[in-house]
Length: 255
Image 1 (cartoon, rainbow, N blue to C red):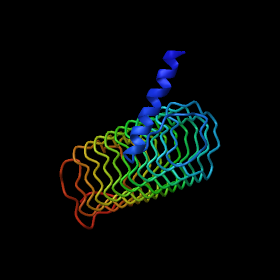
Image 2 (image 1 turned 135 degrees about the vertical axis):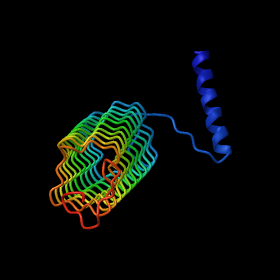
Image 3 (image 1 turned 180 degrees about the vertical axis):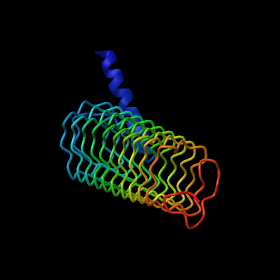
Image 4 (image 1 turned 60 degrees about the horizontal axis):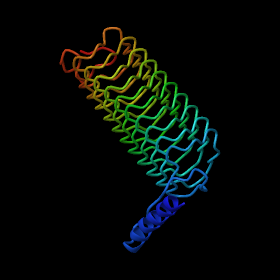
């Protein structure tokens, strides 16, 4: 009894210290109501319904959130690092500056979500749906994105370095100045995508489809492009795999 009392007193002393110094301290409580800055770290919340909730600055790192629904939620600055998000829904969610490093989010849906500057580095996002996402400067470094969908997404300056995008669909996506350095793009589709000034150096582009894509001033230095499809693609001032600079008039073939 004395030991438990001491623990409670110690915790109260910590809270009092932070309060006196104008600081907030949060302890994880999985039964807390949804609110900004809620702490659900490592909580088991499978299938939870968080549609349209305000969870800005929330801490959900390490939580189990498989099949959860965050559609329309406000998740600005939220921390999902290393959480399990399999088949979770984030459709239309506002997630700028969110942290999703190392998450397991196979078949998750982020359709129409706002993900500006959010971080997905080294996350498993196989078959995830990012259709019409707005994700300028988002970071997908080293992410597993096999068969993911980014159709019509807004991904200017996004970082896909060393990511696996094999069989991914990025048709009509805006990838201006996006970085794909050393990424796996085999079997991926970039039909009618904007890849102007994109960096694709060292990429694996076997069977990659760039039909009618805008590759103006893009770079393919040392990329594997032998079996890639460039039908109707704009290759004006594009830097080819052998470092050759394509002529401004190049369409479909680097001249």
